[in-house]
Length: 75
Image (tube, rainbow, N blue to C red; front, side, top):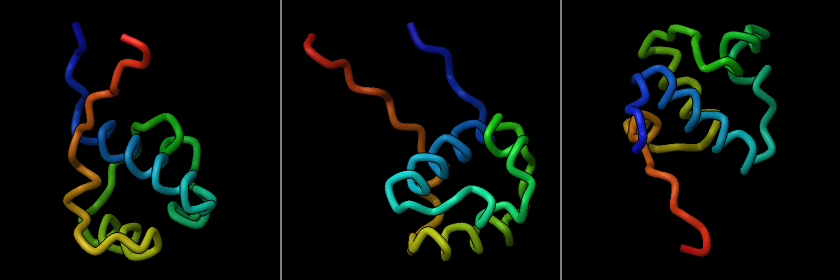
């Protein structure tokens, strides 16, 4: 049984995933405030969400707030 993540944790989880897959350093996204971002606890304003989406080359930042259920490997 999985526990539902909060919106901030979902956002930072997705940002981490996109950043890793696009070889973008977290420090480029959060202006040096990497600890809270890496811990998935940093609060964020919508203006900054849009800026991060632009850096990650994401057209619709809403996808950063969608929780994706992990798929089970070798069921």
